[in-house]
Image (cartoon, rainbow, N blue to C red):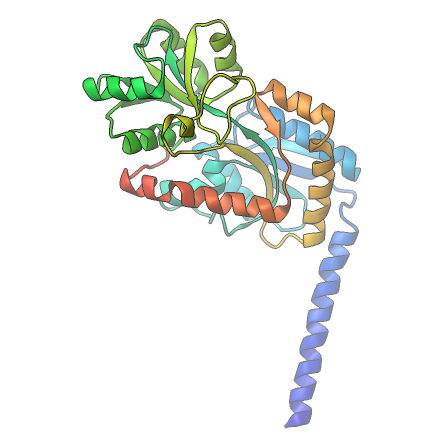
Length: 326
């Protein structure tokens, strides 16, 4: 009996050794003469950062990196596609809060598990969300907005980029925490929200602090009431955060890179090292700033924690208001 058990043990050790060496071999000769595909699960025109990161990875590993746009279902189609690919380091996907975390709760029947089905390689950016009002809206601060909304229930309107979007969930959380009722209006992008705010058709917006807003804020055509980050935005140093104004809510949109679950750790590590070096460069910092973003590299472990915390942050609000992504 002992000899049989010993033989089984030796066989198992041999199998584990072969598997480990096979995985190590796959990682050691990666990338071979084969292009790497970085799937961006959104339409062309939203892939500025993805293309910067892809170019840096291509230069760092010496292999072609192709950015492939696979839009649809708020990013779920492209992200789900990558979840089903071979975990060999040749198919990656850009990661954002919705398809990489919150769709767990906002999209019933999602054909992949956002948190569990990926290796989280690196966060590459963080940005600021801003609460903005039309120029002549009768409130200059968050407290004045809350008071006005309480005095005029359902009369204040706020635009966002669709049900389940980051702006929509932040607006919902503000209403919940402040005890106010605001009419939420869904749009298919930031430009039409801004257009309607400039014309006075909509009162407020919670959206990414990007070029669509910055130029109008600087011109005095829109007025920022708060930023949603933990600290004030560098570009808006005089605008207080929600927390400074008494509302305990911090929400920071991020972008990152993921790979299918099971991608060898050595490949994950190499991609992380290449992109970390780039994201710390003056070139990356300057180019990210053009899009209102901050280059913010992490370790794989740190990025995994960010994704896990993101899902937990919104879980209760999503359930309470039955938020379902469009």
